[in-house]
Length: 476
Image (tube, rainbow, N blue to C red):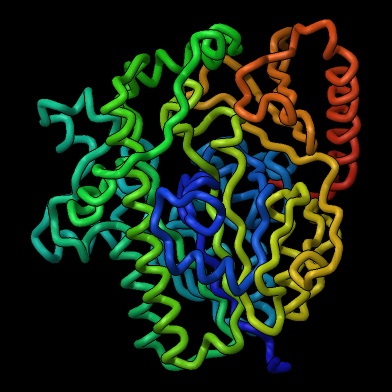
């Protein structure tokens, strides 16, 4: 392996569940290029994000701190800085193509170059910020498919956000981002070491694959868990009211349904998976371009997502809950000769734990204030215990309106969801109830484990506040 600093290719999708990659044990989807990265690299089966929506999750990943430490608790909270600055200062040429979701949207955040492509259906914050994709559509005389155009459809309220992309395939957001990333690698004079962040906007809704991909998946038998009434009845009040809110307000072009038909759920899931396959195709093309331009031999590729999507599971739309469908995401690291090949790691992991390992490979010291714990040993194929607990946080926002602050604490065996100032919550025995449908919060037999986890929650927050006491608003 070269002694040169490795190139870092950091690929992050938006809202991609763990069960969306064939090589991870889900044969209902085609992902040959991600399968290759898994076969030749290391993957983590139990990687959890620290935020239940885009910006808290991404800011945690790109700062090495929990949302409560950064103060970045919901979308459009101020976020201007990231550890990408450390790579830039160490001599890396740092480039972003696609979504980062900083706020402001175009803040440098450590990048020498940014080619922003943000949400597909940007409607509230940044509605009239024109990104690279907006400009490309305009230059081609096209009008973006988004909420205002979808609302004119007769089937809008029945579609659950699933629509065919009817414009040229090259102008689909994920095709565009993948194509632009490959174009940059092909066109820019070779520059090493390179830090390239590629942010795909999908499979975040609207679920909008081209017909070539959607038609294939519509004919497939896709496993979808039914929603149990007992599950709905046992959910905390903020989740019950959020379900109604999401059925009344079309966030991201999705009109949620409280009791969707099996056909509607199948179409939504099919379109979502088809979008993942589109992304996989562009990942493969990017890898080919990196190889052709001489970058790949000394590169580390990371593939992950900012959070998942319930897709109707548990009766919920998108994120803003703490179910596994939201917090558990893919984490794949590939670098033959540097990272263990064909290595599966089941230890509990916080997504930001990958960062100290990347810094180590680049010869950069990990800042002492970071709350991440290095997964370097796991990447080297050594025994790695991982974490005893992983955490996820979300504050009140325009969607989760009926609680001030929500925190998940998850061990290997149990998950607890705490709502600030409330007597209710969620507690799941993950060994006996992996589907998270039997809420044991009020079960007398589970009160001991509930108290143990609540006590740990208190100690964690005290320790975290002390550890990050020197972090200030200026660091956001």
